Length: 427
Image 1 (cartoon, rainbow, N blue to C red):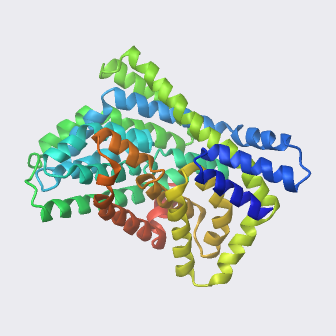
Image 2: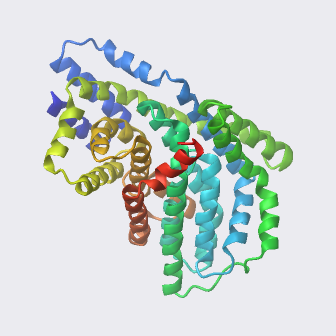
């Protein structure tokens, strides 16, 4: 039964059937052939998995990100990033990373961050001396910071399916997100130095920084309301997402006056599309995960991994290899749902706290968002830059290595992900 469940899923996946359909069909065929359960169980499990109040946060965070990208927030955040980077080699690439870090802190979406910042800065990076492939690679990897720095849609989903505090996950992603950004900036700067790009931008000036900060302060207040509201106990993550929508609309429509009513229709359409895909994946994975549970597959696989070695370092490296490998071929949401019950016991056995493991899981799977065949950040960046995928593959390697290096640091230095939640929670 176990072999049929996985082989049927992989077979359908290889012939190009969508992941959510593969999960449902594999589960239904396995139940039909090997069990006495009614097919109604499939529907029941899908409904119960998606019938969750915290999941309502997903469409609101996506809508907030769409409003921000259309209402002028991304342009102001780019100006703030430019004022902070100054006149250095590779400055435009570093601006892109800093801008993505700012935009990630108010959108929480990889696709939104990559598109909103890339549409302006990929051409600017090319003009400053970067090849189209290198600029696209940098933008794709920088865009993936959107799922690490809070608010983060994957952290919301992970909190729902695991029971880990979403607020703690948000805080746990702050320092790893900054570390990831610094790693990418270092690679971009070294690349510009080796290729002798001319310096770009203006010298750093406190006056320019303060002026740019003043123009973007309303945008930056979004993260204060969202994360601060959750930590202060004033709002739930779902309510915080609603606050993000209301605040972003108010700022972009009434203060910036760059958001038009006509922009709301495409923003809502994009929100429905993205939400539909995410929630369908979550629901479709429920019967598959249920069959794995009743067959005790997670327990057996976790036990098998623990029998391989009792060395904590080796076990952590095995967990990372599985997460990065699966993230390369599966979208982040179904990969989290499938791997969490298998790898969580292994992580616990080597002393990884739930928040630490949650951050590491999202970072590791997030690398897959920058690699083919399912890398959404890579595809969005290629679309924005109008660059073919084969021109991006080689320039992408140094940036991927930087992401892996940051992942290893977060994995083996737990305080990077657990210190901030502990301090702010008074633990």
